[in-house]
Length: 529
Image (cartoon, rainbow, N blue to C red; front, side):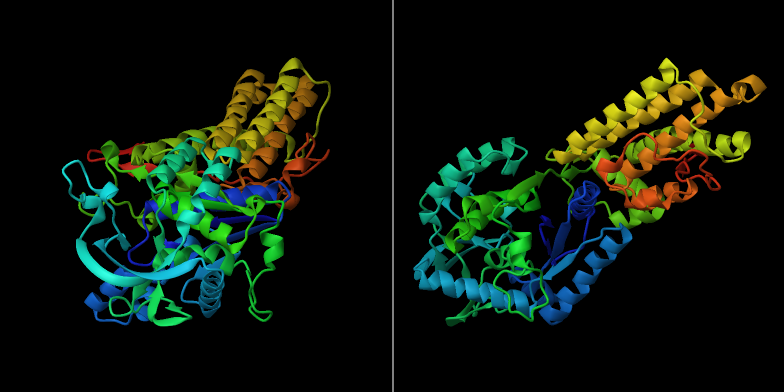
C-alpha cells in the first residue's frame, strides 16, 4: 500500500494557488502510483482548531464551529473543481481524531514524556508559539514574520522534545531519501542544532483559548494546534481506532517495511514536521523504518519573484484561473512549470504558452494527424502495415526511451521532468510525420501499405501518450482513449505499455479536438498567446 498525505489546510483563510499546487501535485503522484500498479490511499483535509480561528470567528460574530464549516467548504469546492480525488478526508474537529489525540496525550503522560511548568516569554499570535532569543533579528527585535508579539506568563504542559533530538540527528544523518529534496535535510539538521535542549509547549490555557481539544487529564487546558493537527496523519489512518470507527486498517497503511509520504510546504518543515512530528512519533514507539518521508515543495511566487501576499495584492485565485483557462491548463501548468522542491514565479503567459505549445500544438497536432488522417485515408481502420524502415524503428525506440525516462522521473516525484520526457516523444512523432508525409503517400496507390504503417505508428503513440498523461490530465486522457475506441487504455498499468496496444484492424472512433488553443484578448485585438 502506498500511503500519501498532504499537509492539512488551516481553515483561517481562503485557498490560494499554493494550496492548489500542493493538492494537484499529490493527486498526480497518487494517480501515477496507481498507474504503476500499486494500491494507494491518499489522505488530505483541514486543520480547524487554534487561536487564530477563534479570534477570526469572534470578529465575524459566529461560533468557531460555524466559521470552520463555512471555510472548509471553500477547500472542498476547490478540490472538486481541480479534479483532486482523495481516499480519506481529515477534519480535526472529528470526534475520532479528538479521541486519538487524547489517547496519545494520556499515553505520553503515563510514560513520563509530559510535564507541567510555568513560563514567562514572548508569544507570537500569528504563529501561535512562544519565541526565543534566536528568533530576534540583528537589532534584537522580533521580525514582521511573527506578527503581533506579546509577553505572557502562564502555566502549560510540555513534551520532552529534547529527549529525542539526538535520536533524530542520527536518524536523519543515516537515513537516505527521508527528506526530499536532499538539500532540505541539511537545513533541518542545522535547525536541530539551534533547537538543541528545548522542549515543546503542547497546551494552551482555556482562559486564553477554548477552541481546541481538551486535555484528557487537565480540563483547564486545550491542545496546542500543531500537536493536534500533526496527529491527523495517523488518526485518520486508523491508529488505535475503535473497531466501529469506519477508518482504514492502520497496519496496511503504515507498515513496518514501508514509509508513508507527507507532501508539505517548505515553511512547515522546520520545526513542525521535521522536528516536532518525527520526535512525537519516536516517543509514541514508532520505529526508524516507520518514519514517514517528507516531500517538501517550494512556493509559487508572484510576478518579479515577490512572495504572494494580500498586502501586495498578488494572490492568485485558482478557481478564477480554472474558470478562465480550464482545469486542464491549470493542472498541467502547476506541475509542469515548477521543479518539485524548488520555488517558481507564477507567470500567466507561461501557463498559456505551455498549454498552447506542448498540448494544443504538439500533442494536439499529433492526435489530429493520427486520428483525422486515419479516418480520412483508411476509413478509421488501423493496420501495422508492412516492412519497417529505420524511421519506424527510431520512433519505436523514442517511445521506449521516453517511457523509461518518464518512469524514472515520476518515481522521484519530478513531475515536470516526466512530462518533458513525454513531450520529447510527441515532438519526435510530429517530426516523423513531417518526413513521412502521409498526405503525399495517400496520392500514390502503390504506397497504401506504407501509409498504413505510418498512421499506425502515430496512432500507437497517441495511445501510449494517453496513458502516460492520465495522472496529470485524467479527463483529457479518457477522451483520447474514447476517440481511439479503446476504453481498456483507462485500465492499463505502466507495465502494460508495450508496442502493439492497438490491435491489427482496429477501428478508431470519431476524432474531436481535446486541446483547443487558449486565445486571449489583447488591448488592440484578439491574439493567440
